[in-house]
Length: 442
Figure: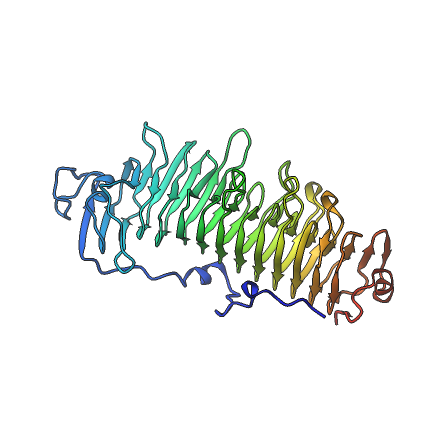
């Protein structure tokens, strides 16, 4: 009866973390703690010195140009007004078994210079950047940019904040194999209005992991995966967003546009409201996204829980092969004019909604196939979900191939198969033609 789940969306082999974001963040990737050589940087140092503990360099850039595979740069506490460029012929690449580590000790603070530009730029493989405060000081710059061959690059344990360009951390220009882990990223805001995201994953990026971060207070999203800029440009692909604490932005926690092979799992998300540019979704998957798995997330206090479909670009395909599985969604509000839906599926193809728990939504627990943009929700599968609240399910007329059964519903809630409403599960079965084996919640 049910469509076969695609291989990319199969249940993950690792045990699913159900605890707090902090418990997920503890399972971070190992970092080298034994180094073949140590370089030192201090605000009291001198770039003509030897770069040792007793004779440190003054600038981070001087040390970056000296360090080699397996070595560490220990940057001492203090303020560093400089751009850090891990790029160019004078800078070495790390190796898979011998990365180069740029290590802040005592949270040294990197701030902008008068020359402008991104504060930290990474264009070499196998560099680890750990333990810095990166303060953009309200200027229109990225805090950190990854571009090109960044295989094995890691950004971890940093406090990144207060910029006014399009994002705090960006992957761009074919960036690949980047881990952004256990950082605190906040207050990236364009003034007087406009999107600025905590992390933005641009087209041509691939194998990007965003894990265990606390990202909030931005005028856009915590994490956005962007559309390609031009026809023929490769979309971002193989993106994992897991174990993060994503909250209190002007738009969304996660916004997936035309990106492929994306996993969004085990995140905690809350604090979103309808705005001129967003319906207040915690997660939105739209444009031509493909192969997206959304599972095990904890969503509350939002204008909409999870939305698939909606925005589209001309005649481009709608989202396809999306699995929404095992999420807990509660406390969804209509405040500010949102529809207050737990899960809404619009123009899309081959979406599976299975095993989710939805409660306390001011709108319907699920809204399916209402015909946004005049396009259908094709081959939608909805099974094994638990829905409690005054408004349970609303079905539109644009849902060819719908398979819906095995769900559980609270007593006395409202069903709607446009335009008819009922509070009776038996009557719902007759007017909708679905849920023949679904049952009341006990």
